[in-house]
Length: 135
Image 1 (cartoon, one colour):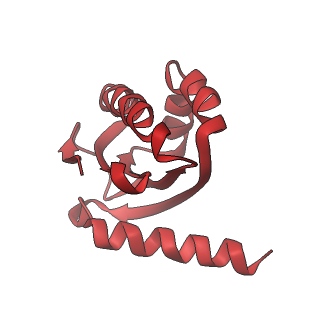
Image 2 (image 1 turned 90 degrees about the vertical axis):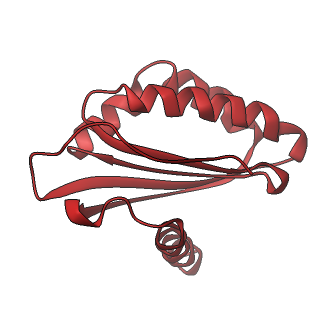
């Protein structure tokens, strides 16, 4: 299970930052290796994106589940990264092999970075439960 631990990219100038976490699941384990390669490319892109403060990736390849966690100066920086290449076209391509995806956006005090994977999983679980109960 490859995990790229938190990598600080830049020092924030504000006491709070905007964070994004995701849980992505592929339909078949056959899709997991290609999804891992794409995830690594997007992790590299995020590290170099304007406004990025820190990034981490956890790939549970044998489960077909991928987790991301990043901190940004603001939501605009997240959206700019998501709309830039290669992220934009990679997401369009990989959407076909995905079973589900959960995204969580939240603010966090700088002194709480990085959060543990347990905390990231908890926040995503709350989001998933909320979305499922709203169906």
